Image (tube, rainbow, N blue to C red; front, side):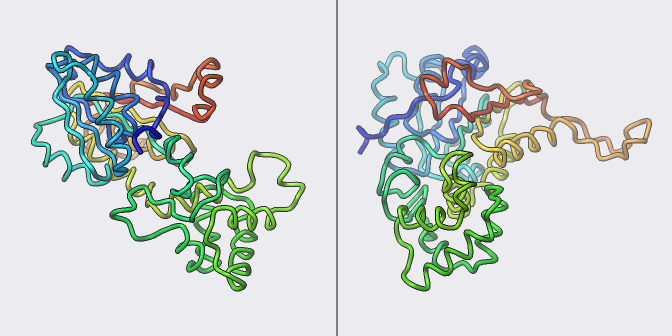
Length: 318
């Protein structure tokens, strides 16, 4: 299982530029994956540092452990790998018994191994069961349940809300009509329904026609947007003064949440804009390191096409 877990870290150089081994001794990778980022961070912070890796995918934790333990013991930081969801950040870090954190990294979305692993059901390109759970051992709601039990109104709602799908109502109606004939249980079946729902003229542009539907269902199954808000809020609380919070997003919904969370920390004043002097007394707790997101270079996209939509935002705790 671990041999299949390969992941090319996105915007790695740009992230490492903001990890200072002299001051950032405690690093939390909230989305460990195969430890692509954490492996290089571990080398930077060295034996004086502490690396905490969080992931809800046990296959990822196993692969990461193997890679990180390959670092020579004399050069390896204290490493603690935690099985859990970063939405439960407070509970997870209390269990790690650390006073604070010097740097966080959130590399959001689905990792390449999860997409490529047919049995996980994340990919519209590979046939597999409609699962899409990030943590199958602890989650009960599956994509199959969403597709076969949500009514047309709720299906259309999540397609619009989670993916801005233009054909949301039509796709929802086609899903409900098809499941009356037989349950939709595989990714290929869902792809066929989506293709049938979207007019041929609209399928010729904008990439794979099922891309948005799969994104929306995955977000719903894993409560990704709710979890992201909770994780970012907790990370801000745990950051030590001068600590950095880095977040890599892959679609507009994620990026908007990151941008809003950073802006809320940097602009905490609640006074009316026409008030000449602040009366609320709320001071900023974050400084925006990046006013605009950092995006991959052309060369990185050529090496790793899945980096194409990545956006990195960074904030520093005041």
